[in-house]
Amino acid sequence: MAVRIRMKKMGRTHRAFFRVCAFDQCSPRDGKSLEELGTYDPSVPDSDARAVLNGERIAYWLSVGAQPTEKVAVLIKKYGKDGTHLAKQEQALSKLVQPKVVPPAGPAAPSLKQQQEAAQSEPEQVQPEQAEAEVAPAEDAAANAE
Image 1 (cartoon, one colour):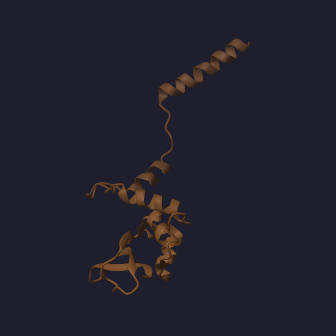
Image 2 (image 1 turned 180 degrees about the vertical axis):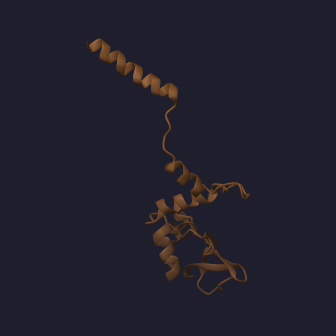
Image 3 (image 1 turned 60 degrees about the vertical axis):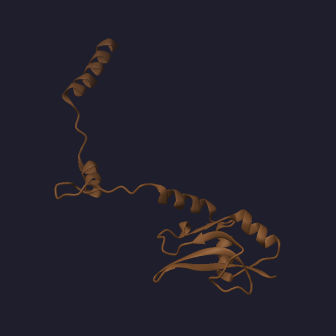
């Protein structure tokens, strides 16, 4: 029995989703798989968060002679057990888990960019009490020096 690691198409029309699975070479594309090894969702905006693979199980199947398809071989190289993009993938997945921040709605609410520009354009104003406190030690130091 020759084993291939390939993608099993799932989802609906115009919204494809794939499972990376180990198959018998003779079984159909969407048929029964030997084992599910990960997922690939091409509709995720961040390309490093699209594939989630079980690297240990993929390494096992490769060690017993399973052959990956061309597309799956690229995914394994990037996101497998010793992949080249693992650090980027962790950052992308953690970014997906965080809740989205929605700015307050309404015509009076300024946007975040407008708030940052306003904060940068305003000069720092010194309170009168702070100005007197800064001048007084300088006068005391000058009097002590004489």
